[in-house]
Length: 318
Ligand SMILES: Cc1cc2nc3c(=O)[nH]c(=O)nc-3n(C[C@H](O)[C@H](O)[C@H](O)COP(=O)(O)OP(=O)(O)OC[C@H]3O[C@@H](n4cnc5c(N)ncnc54)[C@H](O)[C@@H]3O)c2cc1C
Image 1 (spheres, protein in one colour):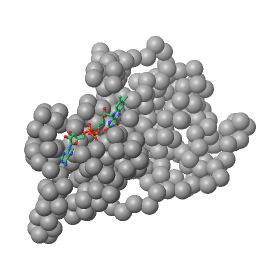
Image 2 (image 1 turned 30 degrees about the horizontal axis):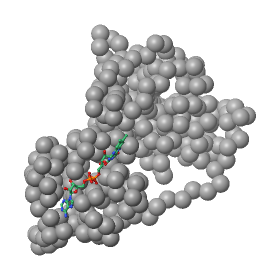
Image 3 (image 1 turned 45 degrees about the horizontal axis):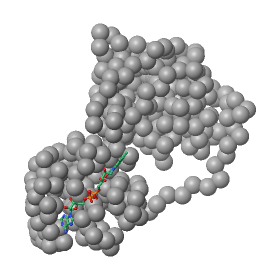
Image 4 (image 1 turned 45 degrees about the vertical axis):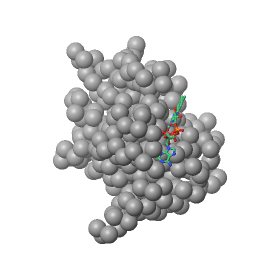
């Protein structure tokens, strides 16, 4: 099963989610190669070897500097046609999802998306995908080749296997139509501390906070713990906190060591985004809140009293 993993590069680093997918592919076995496409990305290739790629294709060209999908589709389509990869895997992100969809259209291939697992069953690749608002998992397959798969973010951790990859540079030949979109401007939100995808500790808030200003309580606790602040969809939809911090079915999937849920009921759509956390602490004034069914530590009480005390205690321990 020759497999190609698309490694996304962001600001000079390989994106963790795509390295996780590479590790999983290596674990499944077979010929696993990776491709990095961008400008000035050559030096990133050896890192892919450490996460299980036997070969890394590098498409390094100024024409690939902007994070636009179609030029990357050109690179991947060329590789699939020339090298005969029968499987192409992506870790989910805005760019990767766009590249995967574009590649599926270009090759007339089947794309399964939002996968939360991959396995080989009697030599056949099978994906696992949540359905019916994440209340069930279904097995999905492909009718033909190449099989394209987009894996939900945060699903697989990158695992260093210590290998070395052969590096092959790929000539970048772009279709005329692929260069018509140009990026005029890029902006990013400034934030302090780790992102929720990378933090070991997440302090998350829901509607129980009562008002947007109360997120300050969570920010203080997160800062004391060296963590990040996340939110439920209810408060994101209400405009209390940015969408980038939403955890759950229509937000991000996270797996920190510690997840402190404050004023969160624990709906299934929230649970699916954080259930892989190491230890879940829930603070809720309703003893029957669903979150207590899966929390490791349940604290029944008013978060407005408990959270500041917790912050004080953490700070006191220095
Ligand atoms: C298709 C679909 C996709 C969705 N995707 C997502 C998603 O990605 N992420 C997500 O989070 N949700 C998602 N939802 C919404 C989800 O169903 C819930 O509505 C949402 O998670 C509830 O958010 P909440 O816990 O903040 O609010 P609520 O359910 O209103 O819960 C607030 C909690 O705060 C507690 N509380 C109140 N005051 C206090 C206090 N002073 N101290 C302590 N506790 C207090 C209450 O007891 C209650 O349990 C989705 C829904 C659908 C239908």
